[in-house]
Structure formats: C-alpha cells, structure tokens
Amino acid sequence: MGTSAELIELLWNVDTGSSTTINTDEGPTSAVPIQTGVKQRCPISPILFNITIELIVRARGSVKCANWSERNL
Image 1: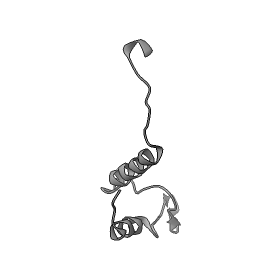
Image 2: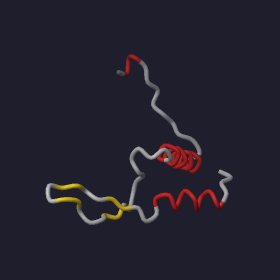
Image 3: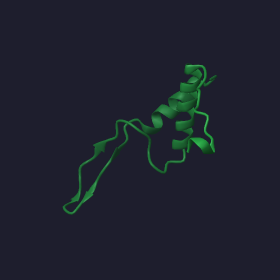
Image 4: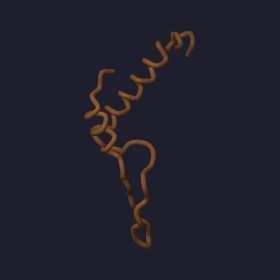
C-alpha cells in the first residue's frame, strides 16, 4: 500500500500496552490487558478497519459479492 515504516509503527503503538478496568459493585477491577480488537469510539478505529479490509481485498485479488435483487429478498 505504500505505507511508511514510521506510520506502521505509529499505528502499532496506538494500542500497544492498552488495558482497561471494569467497574463492579465492589469497585473497579485491576487492569485487564486488551490483546485484540480496537478501542471503541476511538477516532482512529474506523481507519484501522478500512486499512485491514483494504489489505485483505488486495491479498485476495478481488471480492465477488452476491447479486441482490428484490426477487432474492
């Protein structure tokens, strides 16, 4: 995709080492590491999703979709 190493490193570091806590009736839990996925409501999450889909489509060559019409519904 013509992406620079610096941009890849920046995107990688956005979520590296991320953790969360869960509020319970007894109070917040200790930190839980986030190992997969993207942060919800993070402005960069849709961009990361689009980049991932773009890489999948390019690796696949082309994606064939079903031909939908009113008769198929």
